[in-house]
Length: 390
Image (cartoon, rainbow, N blue to C red; front, side, top):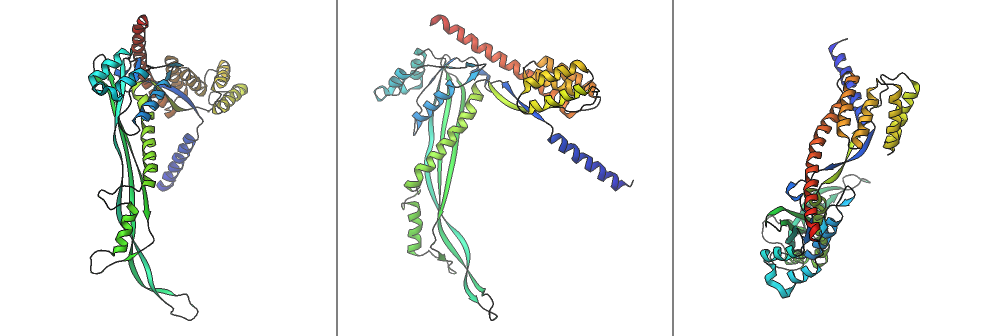
């Protein structure tokens, strides 16, 4: 075999291996991950203050609901303090001095909260930018042959009046511990939405420079709604664009904030092994195959029972040992999963990317679960400290 032929075979085998890996059956399992901001772990009761600015009250109400919907281990992670009276005193016009942060913390402390989630809208605008879109059009056609289609013999550049409307919305959040007054977590969320409109009326390019015609300039101003600087969006566009920008910014907050201040579940995809290497018994082979089919159809519990039954028949299958490791990982038995993955490595007899990835994942998971355990312990201590006073 010549050298080029050898390289061709190696390349084909590599492609085949990649395709087989990509097509390997997988299952999804949920992992509990630690809050990104560990200092928020000990918080139990939180008061959500009304945010300052446009749509500020809407933000605070949604964030309150979001905190109430955070569950860990089937239990609410946070207790959101009833703040109706607090809102009246701290946010009402009759108590402007209450808006001072020191007074806010004092008032929040009286509700029994550990922290306050507050914030403000820092951007709420919709501006318009005029520009011209250049187009080249035919201005003269000529028929060169009888019966033939006319051909363009003269072109000219034209300018179309356009306006780009941009809505920007941004709000900041801060989680403040009442006892210390320290900012435990701060963040900002922003979004921009744009819309471009052009008119059909055209203005030919001037070879001598100068201003466009009055009618053309008035069209530009008409697109923006008013001849002022900076130009604002037309009223019919402004509300729609600002609503889109607000919803997008809030969606970012809804995804990020729970992960930052509380443990959260993350869905991961794990590959299964299907090779029957080491399995001589026909029934054991069928149990392995049927288990994989069940796992792919979201019935991992039954699949694990089949693999356990097959494992009692044959003990030399790396696929069965590995898949039972996946079952242990699914039940969060990380030590057992690691033991089975290591045993599968020995049985496999050669390097397996699937098994190596599983061992690396277990190492990472054990570290993260240690952090989660610490955070849950701190949170439980905070809850117990408050129970006697209730």
